[in-house]
Image (cartoon, rainbow, N blue to C red; front, side, top):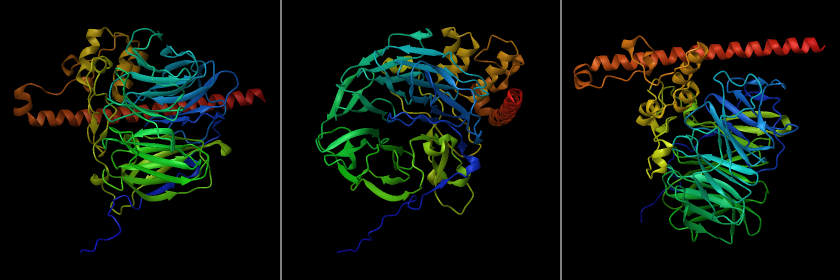
Amino acid sequence: MTWRPQYRSSKFRHVFGKAATKENCYDGVPITRSVHDNHFCAVNPRFIAVITECAGGGAFLVLSVHHTGKVDPLHPKVSGHRGNVLDIKWNPFNDFCIASCSEDSTVKVWDIPPHGVLKNLTVPWKELQGHSRRVGLIEWHPTANNVLFSTGYDYQVMIWNLDSPEAVIKNPVRTISHHTDVVLSMSFNTDGSRLATSCKDKKIRVLEPRTGNLLQEANCKNHKASKVLFLGNLKMLLSTGSSRWNHRQMALWDQEDLDVPLLQEDLDGSSGVLFPFYDPDTHMLYIAGKGDGNIRYYEISSEKPYMHFLTEYRSHTPQKGMGIMPKRGLDVSSCEVFRFYKLVTIKALIEPLSMIVPRRSESYQDDIYPMTAASAAAMSAEEWLSGIDKGPVLQSLKPGSQVPDSYPELCSGLGSKGLGNSLGTRRSQSRPGQLQLAYIQDQLGNKECRSKTSVSNGQDPTLCSPPKTENEVWGGFDLRLKFHKQQEEIRRLREMLNQRDVRIKQLELEINNVRNSQDSH
């Protein structure tokens, strides 16, 4: 009988949490006192949004991710809802688009200016009216552009196509009515062909989101699920909740058979809801409890025992909610593999928390940064509604690598669909450089923002397509290489200009605040 070691090799065994210093936190944020079990915070590489406490109606704050330190108490808010805001989510394919849902039974989609919110924003880009009671949860489709899911206290899950030309959309493209109580969480698999939900009726359901057909249903008497999560391409579900004896518990399920869980594990006797977060690139699972100061993390495998406990991050400050930075916004030079934004209500503080793999080398680590989901949609809403499923568009996180374009129909379809106004063009395109270009053209008074331009016409080369003829591609490889280098240089310069413009606007805002305070005295 051969001897086998009791340990297992793992690149992530020594991952540790590093909290940001006080000057790199967001201080003085009036975090909401709502008891709803949501994250209350949404983050992308440009902005951080957090639901705030306010009198009369509902509002949330949108800050630049670089705007750390003390937050001005009079900072402008997004305040168009008549009731408390319950959930906010950034569009995964447009860093300037955010959706919010509220107790006023509406869902609103907002267009955030490129320089941030410089005055109170009250008019949304789209308003979705279909729910009869307050809306508690929203989710964007992971691969299709402008497809939004919402669910509320009317027990309905509604699917919205934001490509609809109306500013107020009253009819969803699909309503799913399988739930008998409030839906507590929603989660998509990698290509968005399956939707998992947990419900207050103690059941976990797996649905076909396009048709609304119920595929699987779990009714485990020993596990009351509050949150459910698809674990990437592992064909497994993870749920967190409580056991029969009110112990906080995790359960692992086969997505094709929800009769009996593959694994159940009790954690502790606390009462706060457990928020699960999964990183499909590293197969790491993070468990953060509401009201806890600690975060447990595990490594998931497709074979027994499935879950391997790594370690636990501990702090003395309890979290009310958590925001998550997308992978494309991480600092790869410090081997950061995950980043939380902890909402600490007792200190009115948002604290970034980086999960880091300790490495001595300062070079790019390919083994911990595989190809990851890009900020480009794989298909349009019409394609998805017609029955097509596609996996996410992938990109490398290596510095200097090219960001992939969105689906081809995004560029070619703009002219045919008649999206002549610059706002629609900005929203349809996902690359930041193009968004900034559209904004600059607005400021110059050019109302005809064309989706395609060419170098030969003397227009912006960032929007032209690379050489496509056979002679150009095969006979002129150097030409193609120079083209991509020029694209990257132009994108970098535009980023620098945009950052300086944002800083100028921030300084102007601070000067106005100082003048106002002096006038009041």
